Length: 453
Image 1 (cartoon, rainbow, N blue to C red):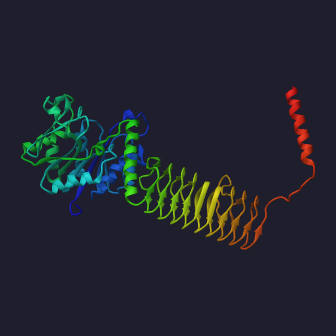
Image 2 (tube, rainbow, N blue to C red):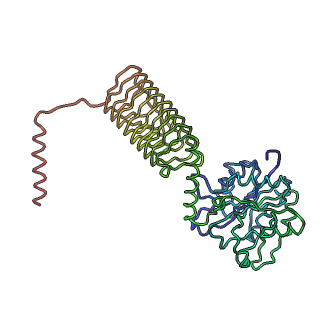
Image 3 (cartoon, rainbow, N blue to C red):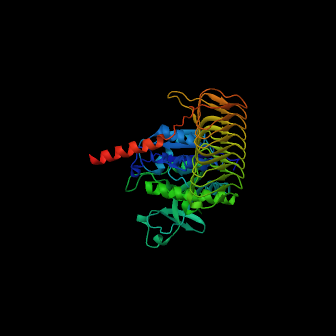
């Protein structure tokens, strides 16, 4: 397909009132990516890098979502809702530029796969003028039927207009269409609104093309490709299908998912082979995990890089900017944000590291934290290779701890610690013999007095 030019017309002007949301329907996310951006990715992956985006409400935001995955986007506003044919012709100027192939897709169908679109374009290469994509639902009631004869598509019959014989047809219209670019406008301009609703239907192109002696065919695509999003229920159903696709692809690529149904990926999650994912893990956008790493149960990872052989969790949180080198360990109830954890370093439990660098083979004790925020600005903490940070220590940034230095447990460190030094930032311990007995007696008496009241 790389030798053929292609324009993809994405229809994204629907109001989406059934979503009951201030956010335009096509901007609701699946796997962390707006619905319409999923569609844009699919057409991009067919080799069609030119997009004509037909928009309505929230036009600027919808355009920005599409441009996050494809740069060459022309936007056209559909000011009136007069049917799918009218919506496609809103992009007349783009179609008129001249392309080998025109794809028409819908901005609310995030599960459309590039392979299905490539199949349609391949039939254009084979000589078809119009290719309609169809599917076979379990129950065809309510869908337009594809009327075929001798391998040709004769018409698309709406359910309400279909005869009893035609209603027995299980092959239904998915809505997606591919047209030869050199006669696309000729066909589209012949669509009229002479129907009960007074709208311009893209489906009329089939009979128009047949009347002109053009080649019109239908191809079958998988049912899940066709799912459109109109409600929050359908949004959740589409998310589930997307996640199942991704889980299967991950496992086939060599990633172990111990309980696949409990692991949730983002649209851009990258995981190499021989990574082990335990149950109940959530990945936000921007994650890459190298081979041999283990992500233990109940961890949340977003915007993070995990090196080869590293270990995360259980119950760990890696926030954007977390970067774990080879064989680093971030254990249970540890949060890492905008911090580099060096090779072999250990942050085993109950720790917060923000805006920090931890050197190779350093050890961060339980309860240690970097105090990176002064209420107005963020500051960095530098911890050298081989350093040992005792439990329950607070490192008040900006501050550095040198290579192989020790910080005593319970310290508050406000000044730089040189390499190989020992730093103690805590009050001197005072022990008073017998005082515990006196305190108990006092507290018991106080409790009894309160009960007496």
